[in-house]
Image (cartoon, rainbow, N blue to C red; front, side, top):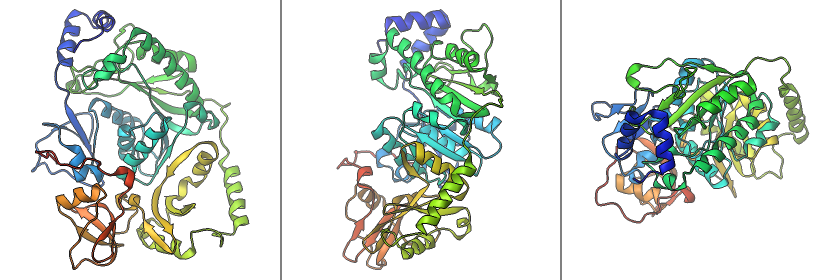
Length: 481
């Protein structure tokens, strides 16, 4: 690995000769592989696996070797997410400071590692809004959150400046800001090629613009989580100090364990409560995090949810429910409701968007209306089904759901590994002659994989076309969980 001379000189001056040499050695080594388990779907048996825990993450594990994730059905079923271990440290802020349900924004969320993690550790009853500014990356974000299976999620595709229309809307905001990527050097050679002192200058200024755009959206007393995957203090400590001085924010300390080997303030003048992950000290990639609380204020402008509620009710009264022109009939809605768990029907409401029926939290209907009025909402809640002609086709999101789908709503059929891979390739599936006709939920190792429609001589594959495994071959050696 040929590191840029300017990076070497700056980082050596920052860390000192001895620490820099240790870092340089670590950057030549293979990066560790880590995953995070979705314990709402799958509990990993310690009798079967000897993986080491990621100490700061409740469901994080280091793998002994890299698996062939593309060819692991459990990965596609949302049983785990491949996430860099250092970035799992975000969990600690929620564990230590968030005790009640909140509305949280993950501003720069794609591809979804932190969003799926946040959704797993947020208190029950919380709403997560996950945003990505780049359109195709927002679709990847939506895919990963769908597979994770939690219903209380909204995905948006907006520039941070668009959120200026939502003053004091969020209790917590995570800004994992675009950075110069120094912490990704050993994982991504392109990061080395793109690095330059000029790019560092561009990054720290862009990061301040993002914070300026989003700060007003944070409620008084709310928490901003600021993170990067870089080492330099211009993008890290200096920006944190700027946020504190510019907005009067309070830096929050975290309780950490000595064995985590986390490095503190690299400037060292104030001993700021900030947290660096350096690869020669911690088992992970380069990462930086700080948490700041917004001061309380009486002059903050906020949305009046009562007004929004009144407007929404007037619209409903005017429409008078589902109209005859709507492609979604009352019978469709009744069938969709029958697919849902009975114990959640008082907490979730069925909404329609063109031909799609979704289940969304009744508690956050007004907030969703605000989001739709001001932002590009890609998806909200759990898609339950889509109307095509007279049929209601169950949505893949329903199969992935961890808390919406009623057990026994569909006949299930357990498939082999080979059948699972064929299904994930969007190939035709042949089931046993005893399999029922109609919509069937396929399972692999008793984990829902998705729907097919069995018509007898074959089963029509309902796996989303854009998510299919495109590779037509299997590696000589397949390694899965």
